[in-house]
Image (cartoon, rainbow, N blue to C red; front, side, top):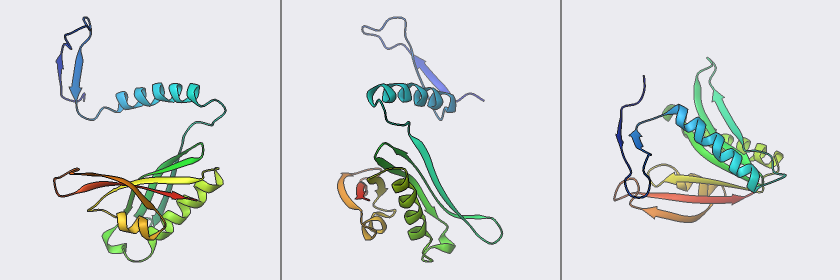
Length: 154
């Protein structure tokens, strides 16, 4: 089913075009990713394209209890999402996930890792593992929270 959307003309100096505003759109995401991959390849000749990097932790029954996903590109790696099931927090799974992610990033030639974490998530976890805060956007996503951006040199 197509996402609900609204359509309007941009006006101004863009006759013949229209804006379409909607919700999640996998087809659009795929197209944008492909187009940006082309731009990135032209701007970084000799650098391999970005690659996804994931690590998962399964319990004895095969259920996912923790995971981390991100990317590597050139000398940089980025963590997109990290999650540990509430029942498994404090068991060292997050530390293990991060170590495995960093080891694989290092093996792919990365020299540093970036991550963002809201103040109500886990910036302290990353800081305890050698990440340093680069900057934060206060008031995101709520007035009393912040989006913290961190980096670690490998």
